[in-house]
Picture (cartoon, rainbow, N blue to C red):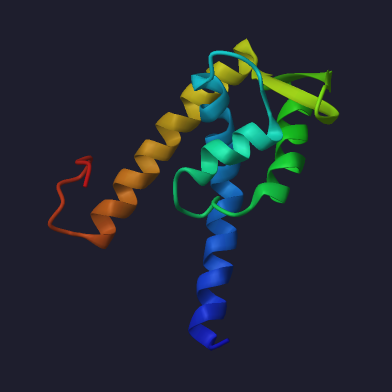
Length: 125
């Protein structure tokens, strides 16, 4: 593995650390019913990016979001295997998600402006 690959992996890891919580809250906010970890991971597999292929990394983040009061969870028996923990976003989680989306949007717009100076500030690429 070359130096450029190492730098890319480090950058992706750092970027992922800051976006996984945002993405998890967004997926659960869009869900019409509680979801378990594997369902959430499958939803994320449908897209690409820094969270793709990191299923095992989702569970500690889900636990942290629950501990922070942003998610509720319940364990339910499964007919096809071990019990499953189902997650749903809380009212506080929805409020925090709205704040995080605003922060993400401002950050994204700023980075886009720096990376492409011809893009007007605040315009979406």
